[in-house]
Image (cartoon, one colour):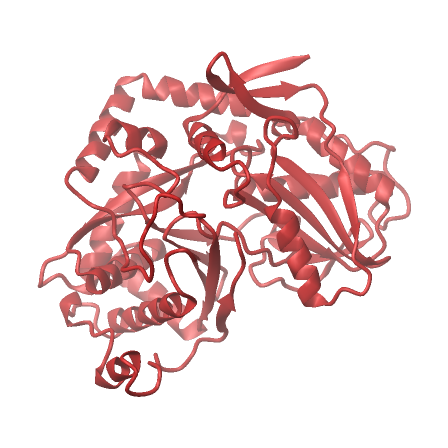
Length: 487
């Protein structure tokens, strides 16, 4: 028996993009764990089945019925665990195999939006990968799935991997459902509040263009939307100084980072007024906190700079944008692009080409604290397994540039994910250096006009023009480098 469900607006947008390029992997997402111990394969397969039984999104396929895209939920789904043997693979080969498994296209109509793969180098050396298409999941959902998979495995094998609890991996279903989320979205949009939100976002976007970096190659409608990532870690002293600036200005850390990025974009692009996006969670109701699905919306922030705008003023203005936007986060970005007559295309949205996302790792649950550790952390024992997070680059090439900041108690890790059809690695590396320079300028003189920010001095300009060494941006943070991957 199959249950037919309507799609959310975010899912409708992703279905449109999937139909444009069904073999593209740019909207594949997922997470992975290293496993340095023997795995009970029958128990792990049963745990996969139990996880699919708990979350109906894992039992769903997507297709058009009577001209309308819908989600079809089955009582059961042939979702299983695929084991791929990689004897003798080195670390680079293992990472390449994980990226390849993540990027394999989904056939949403037949197979649904999820896959589980165990990449095994030896009896006690493997990577467990959960991959999903963004139409059915988001970052929080990915970790919920892996958490439930591990809990189901533990119910079968026991805490020490020797004796199970009751021979079953089944867990009770969540209190709410994704169908509840879709119904609530539609009810809000049909209400007076929906009309007020629509009016607000139209005012934000009226007459404004997206921030747009100068590209190394012309933009084309047939962009492959493939990408790579440039990564850096901010040193602890920078992080504490940023938090102090936030406290002193009465704003959040995210607002400081947003104001700094907007200041850099103003100086880098020479645009005084522009739009950038912020991915925001729509998982507002307690009933859907345990539900797997796409609970992400993009908010659009509009900045305006004058010759006298200071860094602190930019940060405070950013904070005002964030607060106003979060109060209206229920209005779908996909609907906004249509109602302001700027349709989303295969080459991206004309409202937003650059985003900033701040991801926190705070969670009261010990297992999720382990899984969400940004730096991998120390391996831990769980259900007889020795596990640790496995780094899995993803979401590369969805936009011109997506800046993602992961925060922990004392550090900030920044990923600059970019479209390789538009930018060379060196261009994004320089931009990341300018981001550090802008941070330092804001910290050194928060009440200094942004217009005084100098991104390139005489020696660096000579290097860029081929008359001297490459530009330097001062002391490097704790770790910096490029991680390139075809997304």
